[in-house]
Length: 104
Image 1 (spheres, rainbow, N blue to C red):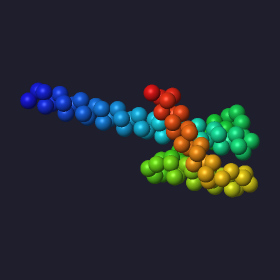
Image 2: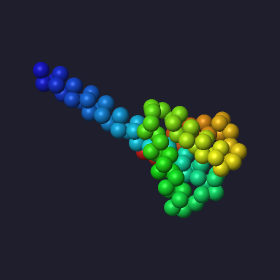
Image 3: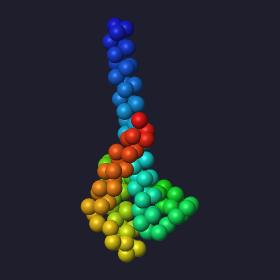
Image 4: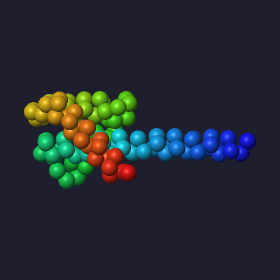
């Protein structure tokens, strides 16, 4: 019975580790996208970091990245920044890969 318990514990530990890694990657992706968006809007320094934090917080609304893309799109539109949805999608994918590399 011990080997089954060991396998169960190993599986549970791997699942927990993978879930934590996914959460960290999503948060890092949102932060990187937020910093990029801040740069596009001419926001720098502490204000850019604060803005990136709001993008990270918006990622908690739903699974995936649609919530952060909607936030950035809305902020770009409000400031009159001409960045396409395709560019936002591309940057999100780029930052997702970068976040995985940074955290690996």
